[in-house]
Image (cartoon, rainbow, N blue to C red):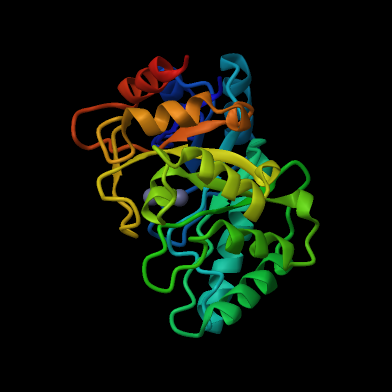
Length: 276
Ligand SMILES: [Zn+2]
Ligand SMILES: [Zn+2]
C-alpha cells in the first residue's frame, strides 16, 4: 500500500524523506517553497541529488509537489493569470529537477466571470505550460466554496479535456475532505460515489488521493481537515476508500492537522488499521 503524508522541507528538501520515514510513510507530498507566497524554490544540482538519493535509499515514491494556494488559473485578471502560470511552471520545473512525479494544484475561482469563462482561462493557462517529461499535472477536486471551480467530477473532466495539452500529461487528485464537502458521500453512498467518479471523470484519470477527514457535514462546501476517523467521514468512509479495488493502485497522501498534538504517524497507523 502506498501511504504517506505531506511533509515539511524546512532546512533542506532532502529532510522531507527523513520526516516521511519517521511517520511511517512510503510516498508523499511537499511544497516547493512557501504555499502562501509566490516564491518557488529553484533547486541546484546538489540539493536535487540529495533529495533523489535520500528518496532512493528510503524506497519512497511516488511524490507530489503541492502548488501554492495563490495560484488561480481561472481568474479573469490578466496579471494574476500570468503570475499563476509562471508560478506553476516553476513548480513543474522543480518537480523535474527533483524527480517528483506529480504537481497538484487547485484549479482556481472565476470570481464572477462565469464558469465557462473560468474553464476557458484554465485551458489557456494549461496550454501555456511546458510540462516536463515524467511529470504529470493534477487538478485537485475542491470543496466548491464561492466561485471555486472543480467541485464536480464532471467539471474536472472538462478541465483536462479542454486544453490541447496531451491528456497523458494531465490527471486528477481526489481529496476525500473536499469530495465530502462537495456532497459526495463516502460512507453509505460510497458505491454510488465511485460509480459517479467513473462515469463523470473516469477512474483511470485519478492518479493521487488526498486522505483527510472533515470537520464539517456532507455538502457543507467547507474545507476543514480532521484526523482520520475523527470527522464526518469517519472510520466507515475511510474503510471504504482503503479497501476499494478501484483505488488500490493509487498513492494516498495525508494532509491531516499537525498543530494539535496528533501526528501523521498516528493517522498513517489508523489508515493501515482500516485495511482488511
Ligand atoms: Zn490541495
Ligand atoms: Zn483541503
